[in-house]
Length: 353
Image (cartoon, rainbow, N blue to C red; front, side):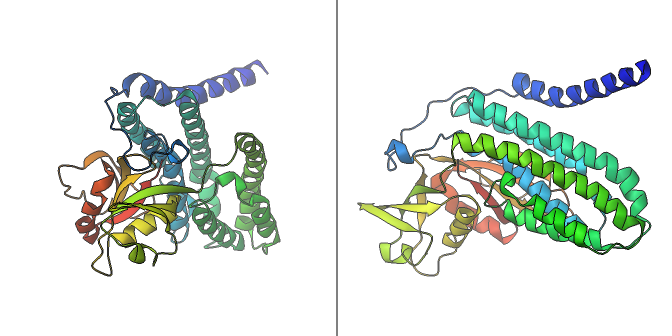
């Protein structure tokens, strides 16, 4: 019993150190200096303004979304043990360091924002470590007994569905219980089926229980806004009204103030605006009262960027067969300069505060 307690204590201490080390590093070594920022010119209503530093501090949540996307891609061509779990973890913490330094230039991040990032970072790290430990051992051996069991097919479908779901909706609203029922209903064909039922069943039930806890906490804080306002120049109201996502609020001289959706829908909208179908060349000059923005590109090699774009981080995209993710800090009114880069790279996301 003493030996068991000893090793259990050492195991827990090891987990604490694994989590505490990157957090301590970010807190002590990844600090920036606050710079004077320009006042909002167009979105002047405080109700429609968002803290500018959030453009950098929203990325960690998206990194986790991308990790699940990569996991789904791996499952469609290989077994779970082929996913680069440690690469996904290191990418989270290394990018957070560069992003924290940049966010500090726009105003130091609040305690609540940091606690949220560290909490999701710790949860993500532990999940990836436990999943790696299992899939590299028992999971790998079990995969030798079957090419693709019915339970593997359920996991493939769930992973793809989950990755798509996370583009617009918080993870804790996902129906893990529903997918658990589908897993249990799948036919049993040999040892791999039973192993997947146990491993995935425990994982999904644990996530379902944790999601209910997080959902209650999030409910107390209230839901985040799903739309925001932007300022656009260089395009006519008639042209902008051809986009169903855009609701024109008012016209102020040569500037149009419009309300648009956030998250992935906004990124897709900007991508369409960058490729005009008429003489109108819409130029976004302000987003939620801000003139600084973070964007990410996917590319098979480091793109050559104009001098007004600052590369903050370059990491391999887990599960993507050699593609890299490039995080770029730039001015909102220069988003149109992304156009030539899209010939060799793809616009992954615009982080809208």
